[in-house]
Image: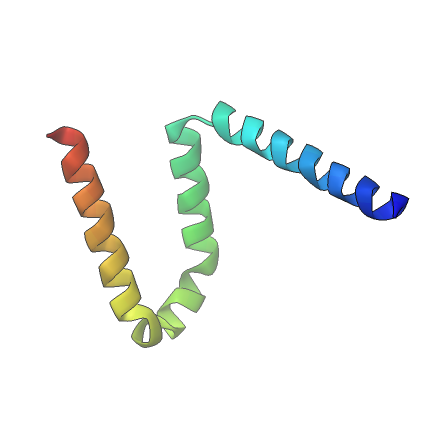
Length: 72
């Protein structure tokens, strides 16, 4: 059982480090990372656009709604 508790402790430590890194990331850095990922995976997005078009529309509508509530 010692190995399982060690593994859980390492996972917890990694999660805490990830949270701290996310908190330290600026909006500009997050947007740069998103644009980089978008560029890297654009070809896959194009190949699957029919499969996920409705999901993407819903996600965009949700994002627009959230942004609208922020500016109210």
